[in-house]
Amino acid sequence: AVVSTQSAHYGRAGHPTSCMSAAEIFSVLFFNEMRYDNDYPKHPSSDRFILSKGHAAPGLYSAWCAAGLFDKEKLLTLRKIDSDLEGHPTPRLNFIDAATGSLGQGLSVAAGMAYIGKHIEHASYRTYCLIGDGDPAVMATL
Image (cartoon, rainbow, N blue to C red; front, side, top):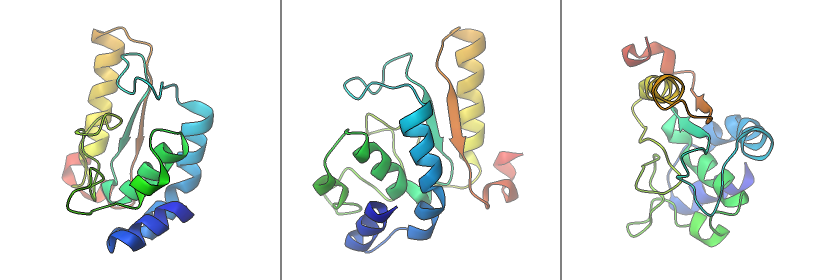
């Protein structure tokens, strides 16, 4: 939570309280539940994580930083013009499964990924989705 707040401060943007409200969830998922390989983030059997409340991206980036995917200095480049760490997650990064930002999209994306994984690919990966309090109020979620 502290590192995500620092990155939002240095980036002069972001939603630090959204990151802080998700810190425990990131911690439990990324370090106790999710299966993934830092050396091969897009491995077909890696678990999927969709951050529907995309404005909490600094928290997600902080979790991946703590997991060892990149160093803290990169985290402090949040939203800089030449940074890969944008204000909302984008799959341009090798550890992001779907772009989110507009509330309500993430749950539908995650449901589709989970369905495809189980019924089409017969894969072993699990799909996690973190929604915010605004997601249920948006029609894309229903």
